[in-house]
Length: 130
Image 1 (cartoon, rainbow, N blue to C red):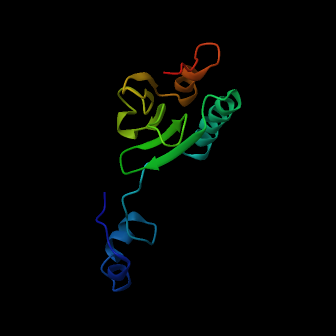
Image 2: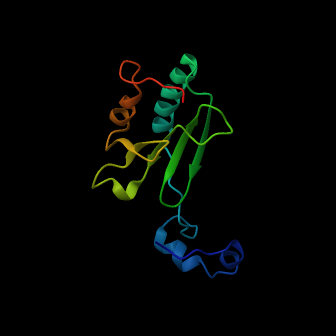
Image 3: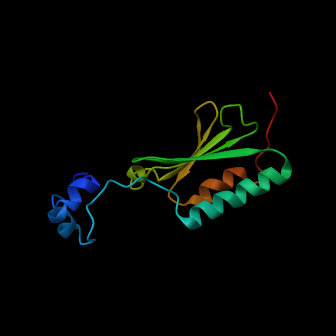
């Protein structure tokens, strides 16, 4: 990982050597983990189905240097019912994707997002009001 260089440092020439090493013409900056377009499309498809059933009503997306999270809510003022996370550091071990319940239990994890999202299949899943 390259050093983080401010734009002021880059314009003065301080970041040019790092930029030349990265081959992009810009200084290397640590990137946040995000869901790609296909992954987000698949997650939103499941979300849409659950909204249509009346089980979910809101969502939030967060991303950081180590993990991206898609959280689903029954009501916006509550804690999330489920969190779908992507953690690339775990990709070689147990899989980058996982579904975590409200109480912190990992319901499903794996390398394939579609397989992990099957935990929400309507035949196998139902929401119970507390």
